[in-house]
Image (tube, rainbow, N blue to C red; front, side, top):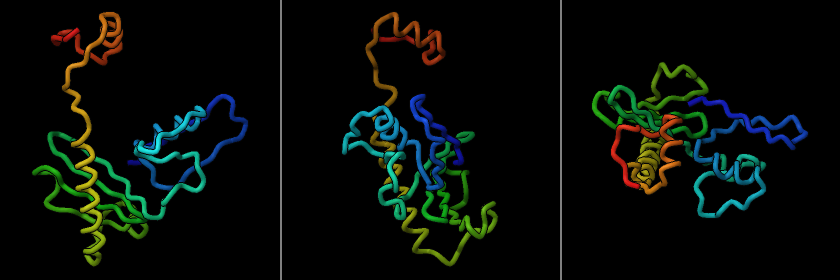
Length: 165
Protein backbone atom coordinates (compact mmCIF):
# COMPACT_ATOMS: atom_id res chain seq x y z
CA UNK A 1 0.00 0.00 0.00
CA UNK A 2 2.96 2.33 0.38
CA UNK A 3 3.70 3.22 -3.23
CA UNK A 4 5.92 6.25 -3.81
CA UNK A 5 4.86 8.65 -6.53
CA UNK A 6 6.83 11.56 -7.93
CA UNK A 7 5.29 14.00 -10.40
CA UNK A 8 7.63 16.75 -11.57
CA UNK A 9 6.76 18.51 -14.82
CA UNK A 10 9.81 20.06 -16.49
CA UNK A 11 8.40 23.60 -16.24
CA UNK A 12 7.95 23.55 -12.44
CA UNK A 13 10.66 25.58 -10.79
CA UNK A 14 9.62 24.84 -7.22
CA UNK A 15 11.00 21.89 -5.25
CA UNK A 16 7.52 20.43 -5.13
CA UNK A 17 5.18 19.22 -2.43
CA UNK A 18 5.18 16.15 -0.22
CA UNK A 19 1.71 14.80 0.53
CA UNK A 20 1.26 12.81 3.73
CA UNK A 21 -2.45 12.14 3.28
CA UNK A 22 -3.76 8.77 2.22
CA UNK A 23 -4.18 8.85 -1.54
CA UNK A 24 -5.08 6.24 -4.16
CA UNK A 25 -4.27 5.29 -7.72
CA UNK A 26 -7.69 6.60 -8.70
CA UNK A 27 -6.33 10.08 -7.87
CA UNK A 28 -3.72 9.93 -10.65
CA UNK A 29 -5.94 10.83 -13.63
CA UNK A 30 -7.44 13.99 -12.08
CA UNK A 31 -3.97 15.02 -10.88
CA UNK A 32 -2.32 14.50 -14.26
CA UNK A 33 -5.13 16.31 -16.08
CA UNK A 34 -4.75 19.28 -13.73
CA UNK A 35 -0.93 19.24 -14.10
CA UNK A 36 -1.38 19.35 -17.87
CA UNK A 37 -3.66 22.40 -17.52
CA UNK A 38 -6.74 20.49 -18.65
CA UNK A 39 -10.19 20.58 -17.09
CA UNK A 40 -10.97 17.75 -14.69
CA UNK A 41 -14.48 16.44 -15.41
CA UNK A 42 -16.70 16.65 -12.31
CA UNK A 43 -17.91 13.05 -12.76
CA UNK A 44 -14.36 11.67 -12.72
CA UNK A 45 -13.61 9.60 -9.65
CA UNK A 46 -10.52 10.53 -7.67
CA UNK A 47 -9.03 13.76 -6.34
CA UNK A 48 -6.62 16.30 -7.76
CA UNK A 49 -3.54 15.91 -5.53
CA UNK A 50 -2.25 19.33 -6.58
CA UNK A 51 -5.13 21.05 -4.79
CA UNK A 52 -4.48 22.33 -1.28
CA UNK A 53 -6.02 21.15 0.94
CA UNK A 54 -7.45 17.92 -0.40
CA UNK A 55 -11.25 18.04 -0.49
CA UNK A 56 -12.87 16.16 2.42
CA UNK A 57 -9.58 14.48 3.36
CA UNK A 58 -10.60 13.96 7.01
CA UNK A 59 -13.41 11.60 5.96
CA UNK A 60 -11.71 9.99 2.97
CA UNK A 61 -11.60 6.19 2.95
CA UNK A 62 -8.95 4.64 0.70
CA UNK A 63 -9.73 1.24 -0.82
CA UNK A 64 -7.30 -1.32 -2.20
CA UNK A 65 -7.56 -4.91 -3.29
CA UNK A 66 -5.05 -7.76 -3.31
CA UNK A 67 -4.99 -10.99 -5.26
CA UNK A 68 -2.23 -13.35 -4.20
CA UNK A 69 -1.79 -17.05 -4.91
CA UNK A 70 -5.45 -17.42 -5.87
CA UNK A 71 -6.70 -15.65 -2.73
CA UNK A 72 -8.35 -12.25 -2.63
CA UNK A 73 -8.61 -9.60 0.05
CA UNK A 74 -9.31 -5.90 0.39
CA UNK A 75 -8.10 -3.23 2.75
CA UNK A 76 -9.52 0.12 3.76
CA UNK A 77 -7.66 3.02 5.31
CA UNK A 78 -9.38 5.78 7.25
CA UNK A 79 -7.50 8.15 9.51
CA UNK A 80 -5.20 5.90 11.58
CA UNK A 81 -7.29 2.74 11.03
CA UNK A 82 -6.79 -0.06 8.54
CA UNK A 83 -9.32 -2.84 8.01
CA UNK A 84 -8.26 -5.97 6.15
CA UNK A 85 -11.17 -8.01 4.80
CA UNK A 86 -11.00 -11.48 3.23
CA UNK A 87 -12.82 -11.67 -0.09
CA UNK A 88 -12.07 -15.32 -0.85
CA UNK A 89 -11.60 -18.44 1.27
CA UNK A 90 -8.09 -18.88 2.65
CA UNK A 91 -7.13 -15.20 2.78
CA UNK A 92 -7.91 -14.61 6.48
CA UNK A 93 -10.40 -16.26 8.82
CA UNK A 94 -12.19 -12.91 9.22
CA UNK A 95 -11.81 -9.12 9.07
CA UNK A 96 -9.00 -7.52 11.05
CA UNK A 97 -9.00 -3.88 12.23
CA UNK A 98 -5.69 -2.24 13.18
CA UNK A 99 -4.83 1.10 14.76
CA UNK A 100 -1.71 2.03 12.80
CA UNK A 101 -0.80 4.81 15.21
CA UNK A 102 -0.35 2.44 18.16
CA UNK A 103 0.43 -0.68 16.09
CA UNK A 104 2.17 0.27 12.81
CA UNK A 105 3.29 -3.33 12.20
CA UNK A 106 -0.31 -4.63 12.34
CA UNK A 107 0.37 -7.24 15.01
CA UNK A 108 -2.58 -6.69 17.38
CA UNK A 109 -6.07 -6.36 15.91
CA UNK A 110 -8.35 -3.82 17.57
CA UNK A 111 -11.36 -5.50 19.13
CA UNK A 112 -13.03 -2.60 20.96
CA UNK A 113 -14.11 -0.62 17.85
CA UNK A 114 -16.87 -2.79 16.28
CA UNK A 115 -18.73 0.21 14.82
CA UNK A 116 -15.58 1.49 13.09
CA UNK A 117 -14.89 -2.00 11.73
CA UNK A 118 -18.48 -2.41 10.49
CA UNK A 119 -18.52 1.01 8.84
CA UNK A 120 -15.22 0.35 7.07
CA UNK A 121 -16.51 -3.07 5.96
CA UNK A 122 -19.51 -1.31 4.41
CA UNK A 123 -17.14 1.08 2.60
CA UNK A 124 -15.27 -2.01 1.37
CA UNK A 125 -18.44 -3.43 -0.15
CA UNK A 126 -18.91 -0.12 -1.97
CA UNK A 127 -15.33 -0.34 -3.25
CA UNK A 128 -15.85 -3.90 -4.49
CA UNK A 129 -19.08 -2.83 -6.21
CA UNK A 130 -17.15 -0.05 -7.95
CA UNK A 131 -14.57 -2.57 -9.16
CA UNK A 132 -17.21 -4.97 -10.42
CA UNK A 133 -18.93 -2.17 -12.36
CA UNK A 134 -15.75 -1.45 -14.35
CA UNK A 135 -15.78 -2.48 -18.02
CA UNK A 136 -14.69 -6.06 -18.57
CA UNK A 137 -11.16 -6.43 -19.88
CA UNK A 138 -12.31 -9.48 -21.85
CA UNK A 139 -14.52 -7.45 -24.20
CA UNK A 140 -13.28 -7.58 -27.81
CA UNK A 141 -11.52 -4.46 -28.98
CA UNK A 142 -11.07 -3.50 -32.60
CA UNK A 143 -7.65 -2.17 -33.56
CA UNK A 144 -5.63 -1.93 -36.70
CA UNK A 145 -2.81 -4.38 -37.45
CA UNK A 146 0.02 -1.89 -36.74
CA UNK A 147 -1.28 -1.03 -33.26
CA UNK A 148 -1.70 -4.75 -32.46
CA UNK A 149 1.87 -5.49 -33.59
CA UNK A 150 3.23 -2.60 -31.50
CA UNK A 151 1.36 -3.78 -28.40
CA UNK A 152 2.57 -7.35 -28.96
CA UNK A 153 6.17 -6.12 -29.30
CA UNK A 154 5.83 -4.29 -25.96
CA UNK A 155 4.43 -7.42 -24.31
CA UNK A 156 0.94 -6.05 -23.67
CA UNK A 157 -0.78 -8.54 -25.98
CA UNK A 158 -0.15 -12.22 -26.50
CA UNK A 159 0.66 -12.84 -30.20
CA UNK A 160 -0.65 -16.44 -29.94
CA UNK A 161 -4.19 -15.38 -28.97
CA UNK A 162 -6.83 -15.07 -31.64
CA UNK A 163 -7.91 -11.53 -32.23
CA UNK A 164 -10.65 -9.53 -33.83
CA UNK A 165 -9.53 -6.84 -36.24
